[in-house]
Length: 163
Image 1 (tube, rainbow, N blue to C red):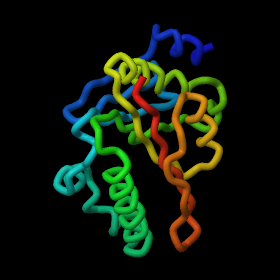
Image 2: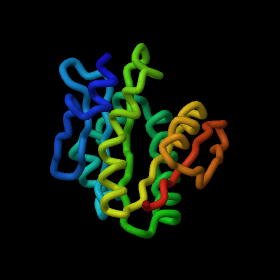
Image 3: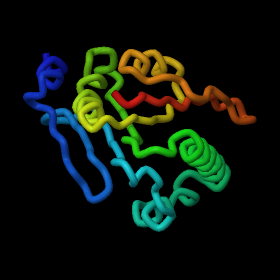
Image 4: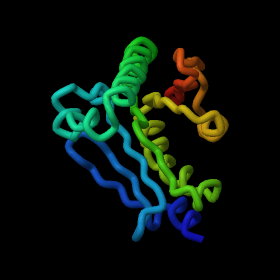
């Protein structure tokens, strides 16, 4: 099974980019993880614009784009408040729905969790899916904040202590 191969590290692909580390599965991607290293967890506005965020209001509409920016602002404030020490930030973890629950997500985050452990650094993330909370808890993360914004959007921030 591919997830087992990825978990063993034989086919896990790590790409170091200028500002992030990206883990993917081999061949046609079944999923991916993007980690921001210590000191790079805050994404400056200029970098966001270069990544294409300037087009969000045109593609998503002004209302949805504004809501997205408010949520991201809330996440940034909580992140700054709750993670003052150097840490790895799991910015994105995604697994193709037909492959969820088969170990792909675990295989994607395990190498960076091992690295964080070897560096004695904590990790941090946000999730908006309740079912993901248990997944992350199995990997040593603890809920820091559970909240919702006025429109009912629920979210959790989570921290994995340094080991």
